[in-house]
Length: 296
Image 1 (cartoon, rainbow, N blue to C red):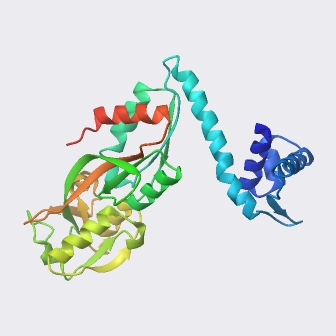
Image 2: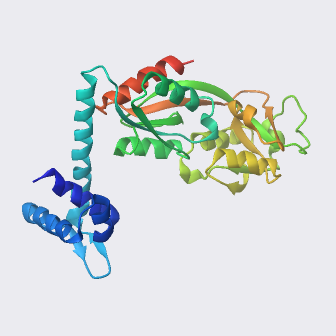
Image 3: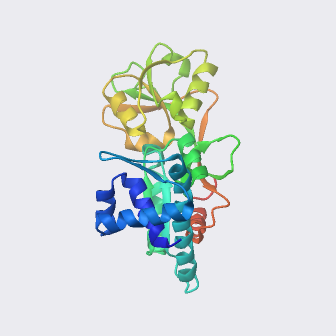
């Protein structure tokens, strides 16, 4: 089995079109088809269902694809290891983050990594909620994720990098908008804007717990995955929201942040990664994170 056979298979599996895969590999379509047939003969099974109108992976193709990806991941790790012997940190680290909630933590990390390791490429994915981030780490889709604690049983390792109390984000014309602090129970009759419950957001879970502790179940009027869009909708008068105090510096002009009185509920920000991820560049980035984002 040759590496170019695997390259051909991955290209067709991702494009599901022999013409596009051939163009991606800068091959004619006929040699590409011949390469796939050689691979199928080597494996003794059919990897694609072909018709005049479509191409689809067979069950065997679906089973083979993650292993083919792993071959190229191992080759990249080997390439990084050879560069590391020269003292050069080189490679790609994929980072997932939620957006506005990480505006105080993501920029210091990315800036420090780029200054320290100019040969490291950071691949950033936004709107990643805690549950999705943990799943992506376990499946190899991300190297690092910004998450909220706790995350529950998992192979993922975490380190806390921030702790912020929850407060209320209110429209500027809300009756309580000018208060120095409010009781959460005072918002029991308001409509709330949150991330979807099924999105697995640590902030959403904490906000619901805080409301129940204050004696009411919030009436949800809008669900949206982007934290900054939540702030925008509050500014537009759609409802109120509970957010961590760190967002107070980036509010739209039509919204205000008001601290909550009484017992505080804290959002604990953390970095998460898979400890058995062998990538040398990942651990270099984690070392930088320990310097610029220390545990409070």
